[in-house]
Image 1 (spheres, rainbow, N blue to C red):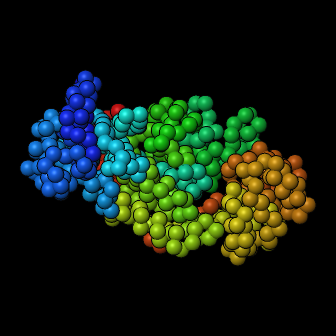
Image 2: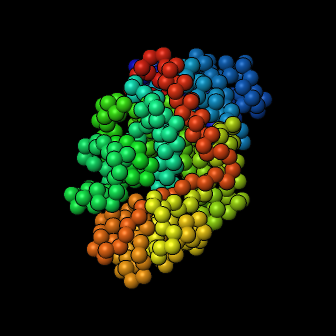
Image 3: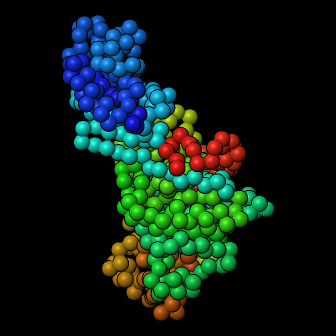
Length: 481
């Protein structure tokens, strides 16, 4: 039978808990319990309840005997010290070799926030979380045995994950050039039906992307963006849907692993999609989050789980109109409260044309919000000498984009575009039809606090060390298979 750790509270009369445990034992081998507080229905009054909340051994042992548990530890899920809760729950699950954390508690001891905290702890240990009407399964990660792997995961769409992944890939390609470089595996909502390898070093450009688009491909998929702008070998995969904990509903990433192994690369980078976590166990992981996201998306809910998977956090968009200075500080502090000591780099994005645009009349197409347009135009003018005649933030809005493209043909010599959304099938097609030069544009992360280069180098060293130290290929603490 699967092994379970149960969560109980003192708002339930102990005989009621004992009866529920007896029923649970038809499905689980109940090996340990966690007392989460509450005292209304505990025998012995408030003194015993206080002892239980403090984890006093005698009181815990007494309650354990009364409900029929061999072992009971105490936590306070509603306390300010979330680290202590996470550490205790994770350690209990790990020591018990538990397959599940079964929650028999309820309001007011365990509320919505506390449940997500418990889910995060369970999932990080590869255990399912189960409550009366809820069951959240951990993702089962494939294991790559051919080389070390670095994961780039995110907390949502349009937080700059692909831009960070591309920057990371360029740096590691140079760092590992003599040993085979890197291969980037990108999964996306518009990826190919079968994993597809693309060699960015072969000089992929607008003509090749147009051909792919005309053949029915989504030619602005992340693997094309990485190949073109980072100049590295990429493998494109697809995924559909995403669960609370980042598992895709359907994907073909595992089918790409033979291509990864045969690539000759020294290191693989697995890039997530939106808030979906790649289904491959990585030796080191960086999480990318937008500073303007709701705080709970990053340091609460199941953002906590993503932070527990990660060795570092890159906060992007750390400036208006995305986030004010106070928002950035609050986000960094909240993430640090979940993972003390987590390396955090605060960044902003700046446009980086793939070819020179100095002195040219440029129309720029982006997915950035309208409020960011003045800053982007100023950066292109000041940093790259462009004469910016139009900036369109309608790259993800085809009706608006068609209008902006028509305007651009009247005054621009160069169409400068990100490789996202409708970039290829609308902007690149329009440039070709109008005889305008097409230049692709990267979003380059620029550190405002912390050293992004040193962070990337450390992730590579960490991945290599962990890869070398693996005791058994195919086994691990996070539910790898």
